[in-house]
Length: 235
Image (cartoon, rainbow, N blue to C red; front, side, top):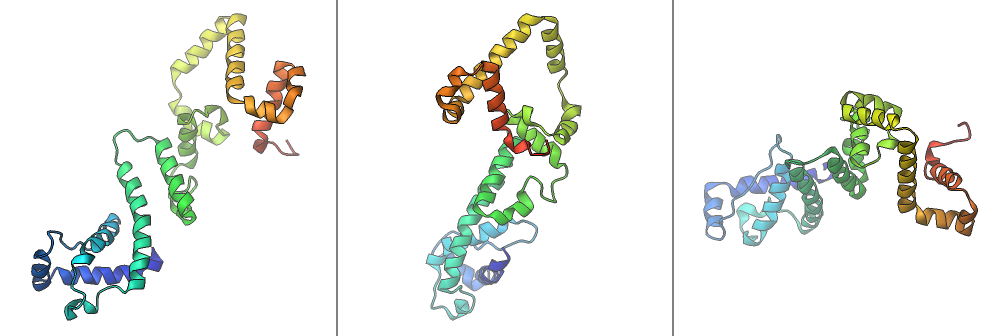
């Protein structure tokens, strides 16, 4: 935003000028739209001001000497339009964050989308940004909500332990009491999920050789391959 401060200051001066009694009366004859100024306490006011500026631009008298010294130049307008496109995306995320059913997973997806467009946003919106109070807690919640609870790190597990559901623990205890039948069913379910998720990986990695492998061997090899980022020569 710093590289646009000069252009934004020009638009701010124009908006202030348009709010004077004489200029406001002239503008009222052409459009019901009113000037909007930027406020330091509300960052969204920057978007509102730039957006309103381009709405008012067609109604402004460029030959008016009272406005000539505060009208942005064509090059400035080009930069401001590019800025407006970025601000629209930020404003969209800002409004979505105020929704009633927003989860941490939703927020992470939206923030990552902004970072993909402007990498320097990671300084403020990244999962490990300085402003994040509990990085392990937030990243752990995102993994759980995304169905990746089995990939929680040690720090994430520790951060989420107070919120662990007792029902899940009792369910594990009941499964243990059910004996071999329960564990066998779990193995079948696990293999079914593996077959549903990884068929292309098994095919492209081992080709026809996979038919000669025992299911448990194939499962182990695929597990190691899919989690290779967690292994090293020292592991």
